[in-house]
Length: 117
Image 1 (cartoon, rainbow, N blue to C red):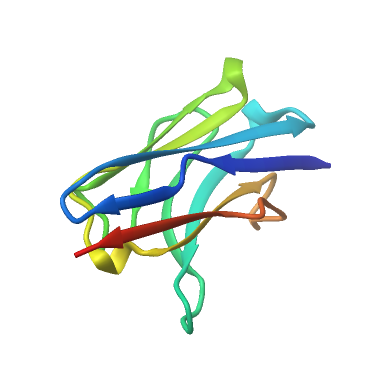
Image 2: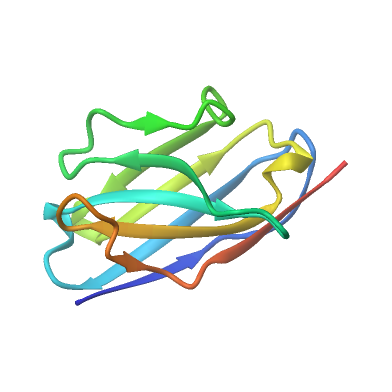
């Protein structure tokens, strides 16, 4: 079992920045790929970014590429999402997820991000 707890959400003006954190506990975090997803009201959950266990080979959704950066600190069992140049369309509940294999089997409860225009 892996437990994931997100933090760092809040209200920010368009053009501003936030950094989300996802603290993991339980099984060996450093072996797993991690991802960030988001869900806006009335919309389906969408992929944002992912990072493999090694930290290299990150991948981003086109909508956030160049603005968001995913990173991880395996010693701290934490994955981060740095969000810059934010736009109102970034408003959503952001969830981190853990993929021990090919699927994201473990999810956090999420943190609310609101971007005002």
